[in-house]
Amino acid sequence: MTRRHSQTFYLGSRFFPARQRAAVWAVYATCRDGDDIVDELGAGEAETRLAWWWERVQAAFAGTPGPYPTDGALAWAAACWPIPLAAFEELHEGLRMDLEGYHYRDLEDLTLYCRRVAGVVGFMIAPICGYDGGERTLTRALRLGQAMQLTNILRDVGEDLERGRVYLPETLLREYGVTRAVLEAGTVTPGYRALMQHLSALARAWYAEGRAGIPCLHGRARLAVQTAARSYEGILDDLARADFDNFRRRAHVSGPRKLLMLPQAWWELRGGAGAGAEL
Image (cartoon, rainbow, N blue to C red; front, side, top):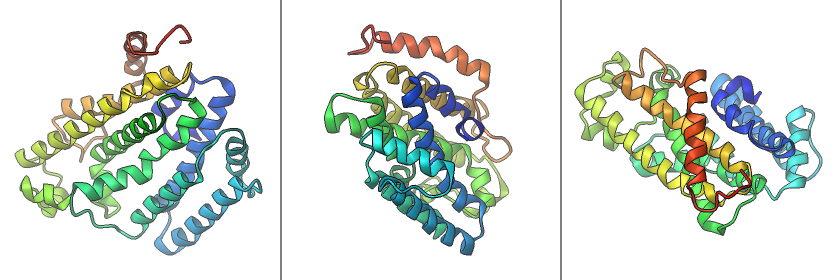
């Protein structure tokens, strides 16, 4: 499921030791299951299925997993590592924002959404990695997840419009003179391009903040997370090369380009505090 839905995340996960890799996949698959419910089902069915998803997550943490393979996998991971149920609770709230058609008035609203649907994944993964630095490291893990989600939003503006969703904050749309009509026409105006540059710069700042916590992770988890982060940030590079046209094409990082990023990820970690010989 991880390999099929996120080749970037899957590539990074391959650097985890086997048990940690299985736990990371269990977390990802559970999150993806919830995301697919709100993206692929009609409103009424999605409401019912998402409530059941949340019941299954809670049951897995209670040691009584439901009928799906992901339920048992999550129950095993939660029993082996101190993954916080509260992080899944926040994810559930974020998924409900999609289900209810949340209106993003300003950057604070968008930041909250990025926290709930992706930032908190950092809280889920960090205990599996093992880490030093306490809350400071967790805050950076949160920021890295938010950066990845903002990247997704910038990549998928056109696809999200087809679902009737606009995550771009109303205040920024007004500031850059981008109307709903401009979005629906798929026109990359100078104002729209400037808006994309503004939000791309914010995402890159979040990546920089998040990457500062990677040396605090234990062992091979550092390379796993660094690889995923670098590959995801590469989507922003591809978006910029396309002159921020995210209506007619989907920005991506090719497989060969991801492989070429591995030496850079390795080199950066070798020079980072605490990288050490464990890598």
